Image 1 (cartoon, helix red, strand yellow):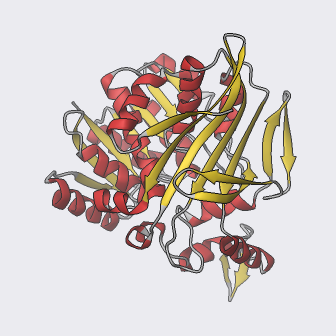
Image 2 (cartoon, helix red, strand yellow):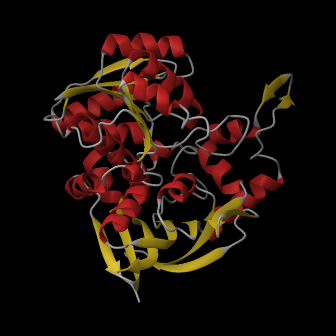
Length: 396
């Protein structure tokens, strides 16, 4: 039993707090902190009403290391779950290092000025974390996160070498709005409008945004158009999966979503360059985020399922093999359980499980790690127990 500190009170932070509350034998105490205490209090009240558990709330500005250190030293948690914005990864990692507390996040660092996710500023923490005797888990969401564990599980049990990985992420949910994003609008739009990128034959290949399309029949959803994007788990899987020749990431978008996004780009609303408006400096994308629906409000409106998984091809005992490991998650079932839609649920549950792996010991190892570097079996077992059951299908 241990105390956990969750930083971030958006959709993912809410799911993680609710799921931690469901496992009192692991998470004996929960503290939820944000720069917006009202959001923390609403989550606290929901947990009390649903599960009869009391959690603590606190205020913190995750951009200020001094505030983080003061909070962590006051709470004295076993692990800090960073579920706020990826812009704050480095600040929270530094605070955890100073306090000697394990760290976990769900997305790798991104500079506010450079819309590109990568690990090159987080991996160097490995030696200092190892010397301090603490663990940092990078990307313990679904993608990255579960998709990394799927890869490690396949490498351990199904292949001698994996040659090809295609990660496919489909959201078949419908929230009824003309245009909305299922997670932080700024992060979502920056990802989608960036150039695509994949790894093949020892080098990175860049593509224009959404240039490559694959129509795939997703289990539980049906045929959807998926577009090649760069996603952060590619960077670590290239380093850690033996024999890899190519890895790509694909995500689905509806024609309606893409048309709205095209118009917003054309009129400059997705820009991160500040402009002067009536004597005040504003960032167009920040303004757009303010007028779009809050992703946390989509839960009661969203119907349908998600389907996220890996198609992997390689060799086993000298013979070719191809498998598909995936999860289906129902938006309405997630809302009934924890009051959030499935996109937040599929990220918040793996964050809770990653914390469980640290507290219970299977992944407690000094240093900084991506999830595929650790034993996948106990994590895969907990996915089945805590709402994200997975399937393995042999493909021709």
